[in-house]
Figure 1 (spheres, rainbow, N blue to C red):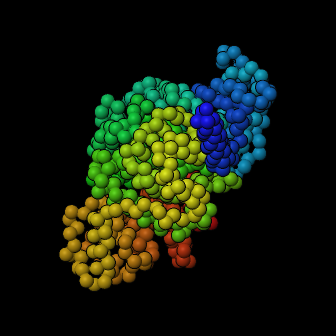
Figure 2 (cartoon, helix red, strand yellow; figure 1 turned 45 degrees about the vertical axis):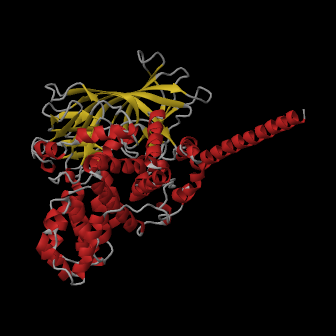
Figure 3 (cartoon, helix red, strand yellow; figure 1 turned 180 degrees about the vertical axis):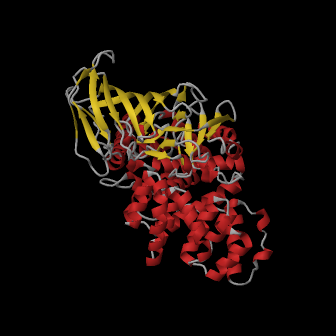
Length: 633
């Protein structure tokens, strides 16, 4: 009987302890959500917590002469909370609203309703507040865009490869969708969509959706359907003299006719990359993966619009050395498009995961050596950029309230985020981490989540496998402290180490350039060689390098960018004409922002920068122009 009493006491005590542990776990989970789980989107006027857009039907005409889109957006909505009488609030920027109607019967009959276009905020645009009936199901907004819409770039024939036809493309990320569609422009709001687009008959329209045709329409009319719910920033449109080349049954390339052969050869491994990605993290859920090569004014390396990635032609190096960008945008099909950051404060959930995933795809297809070289170069670039950033911009869980979310698009969410994931992988081992990520993508498809929700999922599904390891990763330091933590992983590359040693020996006068084994160097080694040199490098040394390797005329945009940065620092005048040409011809922010920043550090550099920019600005996308305007004041 005494033993039974003891057993009962043990069971009671065990229950208390288990209950306490469960309670503590719940408290911890609440603390993570409380600290890192704010779902309030400070970059949107919309009210999805009361009434949410679920589906979009877009009916627009592309007017090149007027540089506007004109038509209507019909939004299927549902009430999600509140009293049932709240208005629908949409995000807009410089839209000309001509009519607003609502329907309560599924969109059969529409009636005019009252609306108000609010005052313009310099970052957010203007709220469109629509007084809708309690039983509203559909809202139709008839409108046109502004010629200066921040998402749209209208190119003249002279600004294209073919020089014959005009070109239009959109860039909706981060909060530019509102400049061409009245919508709840928040990554936390996901919609499906259909679109009807009318263009001049000699041009092809493509969108981030399934098209009703591949070639040009004789009527200039095109239909599109996106059945998977996506945030507004992933809605994309391009119109131009485009042709299509299918690589496999589910991959292909769109480009201008003169660019298409080179692009098809450069990106011929796309299906291999896609299969490699699926082997690691599960089935690709968007059916088709195509790439559109845009004119050089495109402000990014790539944009992960589902089904149709937009890329810059600066990737066409001729040796597949820059297809890492394709790997990156493809990886977004899981991290970003499938599971999305709920707010722009959580941006690292998109880009850190994707950069980590990119390296894994590269490793699978091209081998560990190449993947490690590229990871090491990225870490060195991050270390350089951190020296130029304010402490508030060096953290992963960045506070962007009152700021343009484009300000958060530094290397920090990409590379610091990647290094955090590499640390977790190293702590728990790759096999367990891969299983965790497959579950993460598999259990949260087509969802938008916060940093707090990710941390909760991490602790519930990975940390529980071995809680003794959990404290080895200081998540708070990684998320909220500037700089790189001391335990940040260091990618290893013996090849790049050898390149650094050769460069140091040459600078010290101990190694002639003629004796270097450069014939077998990869593009990454060529990129790292000048990047590892002293800053600034003596002009005589720069002339010697240029004479030996013709770096000023490099056909690889990454190598040329590194060299042009050295040109500015070292005041190597011989490369100034190429610097000007590069800044005029290329609009990619990754390149032009640092180059203008470096020029602006000296009075003579500022004069040169402004002279170049006066010629270059008309060819830049509005996103790039906004960035450079601020640098050059």
